[in-house]
Amino acid sequence: MQRLKVDVAVIGAGTAGLVAYRAAVQQGARTVLIEGGQYGTTCARVGCMPSKLLIAAAEAAHMLDLAPEFGVHAGEKRIDGAAVMARVQRERDRFVGFVLEGVDTIPDADKVRGHARFVAPHLLRVDGADGEGTEIEAARIVIATGSAPTRLPVLADAGAGVITSDDVFYWQDLPRSVAVIGTGVIGLELGQALARLGVRVSVYARGGSVAQLTDPVVLRQAGRVLREELDLHFQSEIVKAEQDGDEIVLCTREGGEERCARFQYVLQAAGRTPNVKDLGLEHSGLALGPNGVPLYDSRTMQCGNSHIFIAGDANQELAILPEAADHGKIAGDNAGRYPDIRPGLRRTPLTAAFTEPNIVTLGASYKALTAPGKPKFAVGKVSFENQGRSRVMLQNKGMLRVYGEYVTGRFLGAEMIAPRGEHIGHLLSWAVQSRLTVDQMLEMPFYHPVVEEGVRTALRDLAHNIAKGTSDVDPDEVEPGT
Image (tube, rainbow, N blue to C red):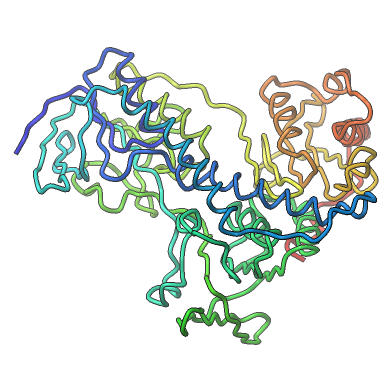
């Protein structure tokens, strides 16, 4: 049994863990990085990057479908599924390679391979694949173990055709058909991309949610827009699934009626679960929440008043790469200079689903603004159906809703399903973080013709509603997912 004594032990070498390791080292702490799986972050290997490669192929196929509406005729469309997946994997491996190059710069003495578990609050046991163990006595510990796709009990042991999003990026060819379970970001991105690449796709949602949206008006619009392209089933319960030959028979219940359909694959995309179950947290001395995640301060990433910090997907705050990197920096800095604990930089929330149109939220969400005890706020809106540049591009679908504070006129946030929404989201999140007022935003330049002119329309509507003290639309009148 090898024994180590260090200042900081970081469990997990994903985005948050790598950043935490480097931050702790920069603070002068003797630090080790523990990893039991493959090096290469979730984003690079099975997340953000390979999914965007698949989406890029789908966009190319979709533009061929749209071309005749521009008077352009390209001939018969042919999708080579094997070539699509070969490019996805080839480019994915390049992105993973960049991460591995960074890992290679870490001294071998600082890398410990194996699965870590708490034995005591300051003591970790790491079981290596070769059967050799390492005991690490650490003055401080950072938990950065990431997350994994959630597996639904009703689909357990149903057969080899039940997969998660991680499996998609190892396909050698595109499948004939896929049932997607979940209308979160992952489910909608993969579902739309596969459908545009000629795969028969049905998407099932237990409720009426669409990605990260909470504004019921935008939710309703998103449901309408996505249904134009996807076989989308809201309020659908998964009853059972079983393998029959090379297909899965999936049975669902909608409105009291049970229906069964056959698919080559059933893709579970019902969220992600923090990887904290097998960490031996019962020996850590930490207070745990009902989800098994240690209770922590989101400003410092410190668990209670302890020497332990938690960062990235493991804390179940917001499972996106920019947040994981920020968490890792805060946790690593504080672990490195402990007991000098300081709040770190927390940026304005910004999330995006790379569907078409993009689904984006930023700043304060509608749900947060309407929480009990919160003051009333003004709403402005714009539809992209008749927005000039959107019509030029044949992307004139969606809606943007913006929120502002009465009296001060400060811009608070927005939710949207919008063409080029990934770019609009950045502009508006910068405005929130800069604490701009709506009037100040309207003083900014807007070129013509650009999609951002739709933003100006929404802001003008918001400014008008702030000035008169009310909004034209009562958002509570609309039910989501209808």
